[in-house]
Image 1: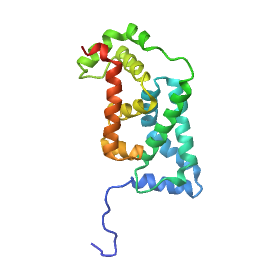
Image 2: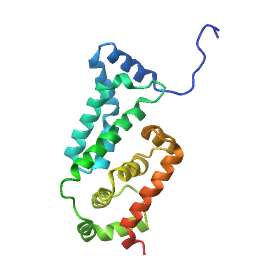
Image 3: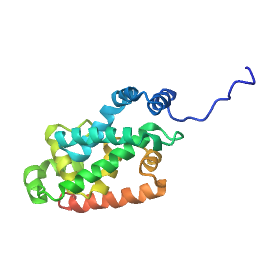
Image 4: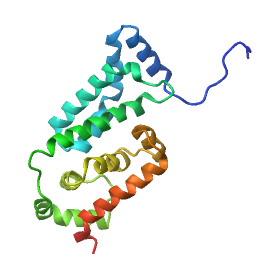
Length: 198
């Protein structure tokens, strides 16, 4: 091996992501479309799971990429672009949920009346296969009763499957803080579902 060649580096952002970002920052703004194509499904999926409303999720995902484009120069290149993008998405969905809070939400009593049996089965015996459409609606309704902060945490962990370390990087906090906040979020979920755990 030529000693003048650089040694292998620890895992970091994909080189092609960094190259695209460099091109955008150099003025080739159309290159950003490649990042949109690469991450749009993941970001829309996160927004959909968090907001439980297709139109709102589509609008939020668009806003995430718009904000990411506008603030791309603040991206720290030692982090994964996907982690940074999730952070933008978390903040955007929290804002959307706070805006929605001013409108009337489906009450917990209505949710129990419509989906009580499905929720009870789900909580006592989590399905080994992806939930059907009715169960998805029940889960989304259940999550909608939580605070935006709790909901974001549970979606990142339970729906997106992020590790504690990935969540810590996404939320810009320590792994211990993630675990503590998840514990509180799950406690809030148990309080909401205490009628089904007995």
